[in-house]
Length: 241
Image (cartoon, rainbow, N blue to C red; front, top):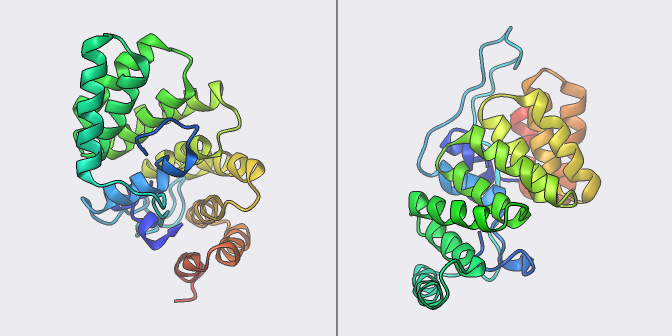
């Protein structure tokens, strides 16, 4: 993850949606992006005191991933809301319009209103992985970490091949210092994408936080190979600073 990602929820305290459906992955918001944005509104996260299950105190923010290349601006999101409003007026209960409006509202930081639309969309399609994934991101931004963990879990249930949902759940667990439980989620994300630099980086940070130095170094070195920006985490968490 990038130094910015370290700031997602970590920044919020630790780590951790495009306005289109998941089919257009280039526009899909990532957990790391959400984390970074949240981080801007918070301070540095600190792990539990030594001797606790979380191990050593790791005072830091977790890195953040670059947002999708075709990034939209606020006017684009407002226009999407306007179009969605028109579609919902013509066809109340339109799932695609609700989901599009929810994503746009979340981008505009209208998180509570976005939740209303996500909840309505989930009622219409209760097995939609896309709804749960994006609602999980929205909950990350709201610092509702338990809810985010639950939503990302549902996303992985309905789409077991979604590496970002596994990553998002792991990042949310890190926010509540549950590093040990986060590690299997990052491992699953890596199994789905062996070149997933952010997953290696976050897993390395999690290992470092429970005093597994050897594993932490191996993951952070791999992350730095895949993404030079992860070098910052390598130095920070392996004592090279």
